[in-house]
Image (cartoon, rainbow, N blue to C red):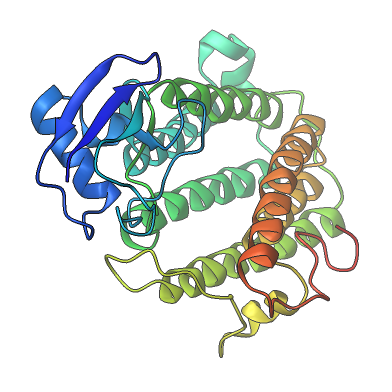
Length: 300
């Protein structure tokens, strides 16, 4: 069997000979890479020029391709590893916040050297560091990525969001004129932050254990023996729920408007992601729990 691979503009890219019915899209990508030199990570294989990307595990047989069939490949452009992007976007806030925490002359002038720091400012720095060190360690040891790469431009977009928002929050929390809230607000926010961080880690570990190494197996996430995972009974994406809880706790603890804006911006984006995943779960699993919401129990 012979299959021709065309670009989305209609130009011939590669001709695959001796194709057997069990050949997968992943193997087709490798053949295109051999003939064209286009990395498999840049390829989106489609049945139609403007169609949807096919899954790597789809085969010639399941796609019902015949001898002489034509398929299309779209060049996705330069790619970068998911793990690389995560490490960059999480390392930046850690460095930026702790640098501004030192009250450099660049931001505060001489006033930063003599004005005393409230205790909550030190607590906030520790919390910020813990959050992003946790994220870095999760990226290295916990997360399993379903896709190897993402568009290279995402590196700059993601880093800009995290790094610049961190600078905005850190500038205000560490400012010489920062006024600490009451002890009740500080320790109440700190408790919410700590609980949410533990909950977020627990969910990430539970999600990791759903997918065996080296596979793309998808299962319905359910509570484990860890009590923090009971939130799976109420929402599809409790990791996002806990993430918002962390930044809500940080906002309460510092009573800082920029921190609140960061929490709200994150909640908005995570709600979009959660609604998309919630919809995908319901579509993929007919027996998916109908009582679950996406991110906020009983609400959203």
